Length: 273
Image (cartoon, rainbow, N blue to C red; front, side, top):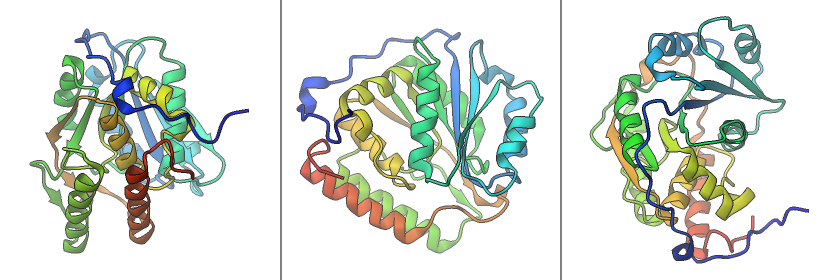
């Protein structure tokens, strides 16, 4: 039986080893959570098809359908284009945290060696032109590379209220969680597979506890606690590219940030669910 609480180990005792440079043949594994994204996914697929250099041998695109009520899963299953696409299907909507857990399990389970795990929003709001530089930073030694709208990027076609909330939340979480990154919750990131494996070895099933959008701030904080080398690349976010409304709900996300601060203060491994 799996323990509900991982045994406490001081972070200093499990620092991530220094990452070595990677070859250009290192595969990229994309993990994309999708909930009711049938209107946006075709554009994301087209954007990726136009960048075949992002798919060296053994690369693939994993779309995690998070209990969609539209034709998201059927669209992925019917895809017959050039991309190596896989579908992971959650029968009920469980939130981004569960989708990333399932996506990471699929990515790491079928990647025996090192790989770069790229996480993306399904709604194409982030600028994929930043991805080559992000991949280069990870290949050169970074364990986690963030697309940072607050670190030199711009928020386009986003309401003033959302911009203010995003800036304030990032500032508060940066201070509360002890991370240097300026953008803490964007989905658009590049992880080294080895860093995710080390983090899972340390935290086990508690690596991602938050079910909502705060899961990315949680993962960033835990990797930082383990000494991961984190870098940021300025990236613009264009809300005008999205069809439909954002799936993020403000109040649950703020409550989740508060839980993260409590757990971080108590010690990640020692705080019960």
